[in-house]
Length: 386
Image (cartoon, rainbow, N blue to C red; front, side, top):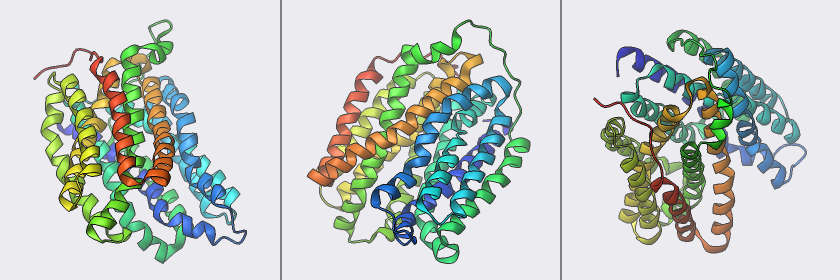
């Protein structure tokens, strides 16, 4: 990547990671905090408050992605960050679970994923786009692991309301980073009649959207089962699990980098199919091969494929989508991404309750088999070669 592309990738990746850091830091501490609220809310209300942002994220990705096609990426990203900051303030200043849920919903309404990804696609060449997307996606992965470490520490200093308020501040500070560090692109006027409808009906885009839905359905299944297996095999309590996740994420990202370069040189479909097969293998190894070696090997296989696919899929969408509707196409893609989480959470939660962690990973592998049927039929758009 040239200096302009690195600047865009790092700036947008930092903004996205900072935004998600605040979201993820809440996860390990919110349940205990919410049960101690004065009104003693039910588990159902606590669960709704925790997941409300995911629902509104899914609802607003397409409208904001399409809006970015009309008025430009940066104004939509800035507006989304302000909305996210407002939601964080509402949640941070509230002491009732209902108003915290409202704040979480408002957070999700600042759905900038589609606009951020479309902007990155606008300013990177095809031959480096998968690598660029993967670097940005890796930032979110590191934000997740870092949040598992920092969440309980921050809660001890400022409490859960303080984490919400800190998130609001970080969101506002991120706006000038986007505005000045990321390159500006010209808005492209629509030239194709009915082009917007094509982002819903194009078969190849649909296959990619199914892919990201399944990929993000696998994640909650993995993180429901893996902590139980880590505790069983290593004897480590939850606060120490980052000692597994962090080196695995770092190592697999490094291993995936050469593959990402090949994806941008005409190997997109073989790597897509191979990535899905590797996901299946990782899940099955972790579920069936007992012992610490089997668990680490399974996690490594899963995350090397995850890192590759997290960069490959949006890159393929950006190439396939009509240029004047790229933001809308990324909005549909992001909607599928966020819908995958509750689907995976529902499947994983039911399987964990009735059959345990090994069966949960096996069920996730079954979802990957479904995805494989779509991936085999995928026909990528022509790719630039270097």
